[in-house]
Structures are given as structure tokens and as C-alpha cells.
Length: 451
Image (cartoon, rainbow, N blue to C red; front, side, top):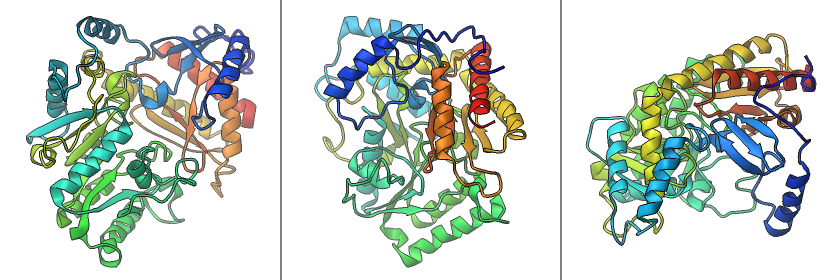
């Protein structure tokens, strides 16, 4: 059945995009807001519930983007909304640096308990993932007395200057914004689908880990490196999933040279990969962990959690921020954690990922432009190529598929340094029917654009 003829139960497209009301707002947006902030779908939200979003023209979409992975518990979960209303009646923001409040302490205690490792930990809060990364670097440098920070090719850590310096993709994130922070270095990260011809996954891991170890002979001595920061699954880099061998190998190198390991769990955390944190898949305990996105169900809050002795390295006043750990963000996060546990959403993530893999793994046998399908829990990706032999990225076809899906009621995004990876970040509360309907529409878009 053609995508235009497909009957839907949840999707309800009353207009093409942008609709008349969205067009009016779009004109206002272009006149009053700079072009820099990108927009995935050319319309404006009016209401969100669970995995559904309705725009100002009455079009209802199934959301497979989840605010770029910020909505693991969905749009407007009732428990979170009620907790926010209750918090609003008490106080909005006394500022933790002026007068402390209990939700900040309660959330810190919870994250100290939930994050990997049974050692003593401490947590403090900020506003965004980039701020968490910046502060993790500050803490690592303060504790070690060293300067250098190592990140990885294709990694994404944010848009502030240290975070941008650690980020790998030039356009649109770094182009024209230099100079960048000094003493930052990048190492290769395994991308098994794009490994050199004839090289196995184990061989690629071994090659990269050897290059990593050799780096301390050729570039920077290990005793000058404060920390290595990595995403346990690369997000913006294309949902590239490393092996346990690689992650454990990086940890071993860090231990060899006394380097701290920072796990950037901003996108992978809070159930996205089928574990509370993706590092749990590899049995590796990081020294510091950064968190944001789905921690607050859409409220701006982030966290750095780490070994107590490391977190205590900065003196009083050396880390913090006026709005860090806002009472509303803390109240939301405590409810998110309860939802993840009570509704068994970690198990749900595995079910979602399996459904995506089954559908598009089967479609891959039929459509030659589907180069790779990969998933860890509900962090799923479909890589689009020109043909299966060259594996040349096809950014243009990817863009057409996305536009076709958007016009027919599925919100979806791309990723990867080549812009040719379709990423699926649906809320974990998406129902089986909603998931099936969204994958039907997405499959039809694949066939319409390239089949």
C-alpha cells in the first residue's frame, strides 16, 4: 500500500506541512529568531501526550525523535506533571547556593545509588548536557592536576567551547567557531560497518587500542592526560555501537596511566539502551558520568556523578551555577526514575529495539540502499547508502525519506557525520500499536523514496 493511501489510527494529518497556522508562526520565527537553531519538522507543537504530538493545525504525529532522546518517559507523563504542580505550590527557585532544598539532595542520593559501582559517590546538578561535560572536565583536571583531555572521532559532547572542542563533527558544530580549547585530542572509535575491507571487529578493536596506547609515545605522555571521555554509544555520530572488548580496553588503558574515564551518558542514560546506563552493558565502571536529556522528562537539568574523592576535589564555589539542579528539574527527575522502575521501561526498550531490528533487518534484504541496521535497546539506527558494495553514504536519499515520513505523520531525525543515518529515539512508553503504525509509515516512506 502506498504511503498516501495507508490508513492510520493514531496519525491524523489534516494539512500538508507546514499548515496555515504553522506557516504564520514560521514567518514570525524567521523574522525574530536567528537561522542557527535548526528545526526538524516545519510546524509548531500544540499538545503532546505519550508518543503523540499534535501541531497547531491539528495534525497528530507519532514521535520517533523524542526531543532528541529527552523523552524516554514520553510527552507530559501524568506523574511528572503532578509532581511539578505540587512543587510550583511550594517554591520555584531559592537557588541551591543560597538556600538548599531537599529534592536536590534526594535526587543526588538516588543517582549515587543507581549509577554503576558500589563505591562512595557524590552528585551535583547543572542545566544541560554540555554544562555537565564542561564541569566533568574541570573536576578531572582539578583532581589529577593534569591538563590533557582525550575524546573520540565522531563523538558529540555539546556546543559550548570545551564541549565543542571535544566534539568531532566540523559542520555544523565547529565550522568558523575556532580557536578551540587547547590540550584536547581525539582518538579513533570503532565503526564496524565501515571497517577496512577484510578486517574483523576484533581486529579493528585491537588496532585502535594499540593506536591509543601508541599515542602516549608519539603525542602526549600518559601522565599529562587528566581524562578520557567517551559515549558508550555514539549518538550524533550515527548510533555507532562499540564492543565490550573496546570499552574494557579503553578502561584498561586509563588505569594503566592513572587517567580518569568519563562516560557521557547524556543520550544513552535512563533506560534508552535497555539498561539504566549504557556502560552497564560492558561491565565497566567510569570514574565520572555525565547525564541530562531524559533525566527530567524535558525539564532542563543535568548531572555529574562520580567517585566521592574525585567530586570533592574542587573547593567551595569552584563548581556550580545559579540555576543548576532547579527544584522543578529535581522533582521531575525523581518521578522519571520511579516511572522507569515501576513501568519496567528498561525491558520495554529491548522490545522496541527488537521490533525495529526485525522490521528493517527484513527490509534490508529487499532494499539495497539499507546498508546497516543496528540497535542497542531502543537506540536504533538505519544507515542509508548508495549501494551495498561501495557503502557510499546517501545523504540526499536520507533527507527525502525523512521528509516523506514527516509529511505522513512520523517525526524522525538523521545523524552521523555523513548525514545518512536515520535514528529512532521513540519514547519508551510508545504502545505496540503506535510503534507498528509508525514503522508501517516509515517503511512506506523507504519504498516510496528509494524502493
